[in-house]
Length: 331
Image (cartoon, rainbow, N blue to C red; front, side, top):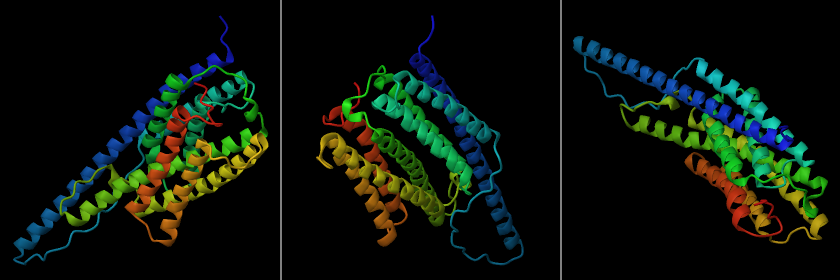
């Protein structure tokens, strides 16, 4: 029996999920190797400190108390697991892209008219942003692979199992070129926000490690010791979130123009419109607080995390449980 384009698309989705799972495992193994490297470095440093103390004691001198030093980074070489993780992510991205294109061909339109299609496209763009960033950014951000592939795998799995609907024609309000512009830019900004979210989570973990190491003489080092310091992570998250915010601002403006053409008004306080504006306000507050109020460190990271939480709330809860002109879940 000959398979339809949509059925082939579904097969590509599940194949991509399998490869994403392999990539997630490979990235997780790399994190475990980082932990082992950090532990070995800590043990070596402890032995050096003991030897120095013995030498001082043997010479009859008195060792002065030394304040605990801030946590230092540990050199970490290339890991085969890391290369496998990136290679599997690229392969999963190819399968993911094929699934999205085939869904669009099966529907005869761009594949983002309902929750399943938006999740399919949105997670593809998250992976695309990650792969582009690890190539163009000087800082090695491949360690984020565990967070990104895990997030994409969960979202794609939920979409495939719970949000799937057969291809249907577009509602009249969606039959516009603004569908391509508005939703594509929104998806791209979500991809950037997801990467900023992952960086902020790691930043909080790194800041916690640095704080413990600065106050405790024998702090236990983990894989975080092989990653950039919390300030570097915060700066990267901030820059990425700024780009996402600019694109989200365009999303808000494009949506208003589209609303005027479809319904004769720029703003109508529809639930989806309100939450799009709430997301904009949260990220605007994050950028303003960090740039002008000096909100750095954990406060900056938590604002970024709250911002991405509003994005997820808008995609899931608002689409599923709130009715309005933007109720295009297809369920």
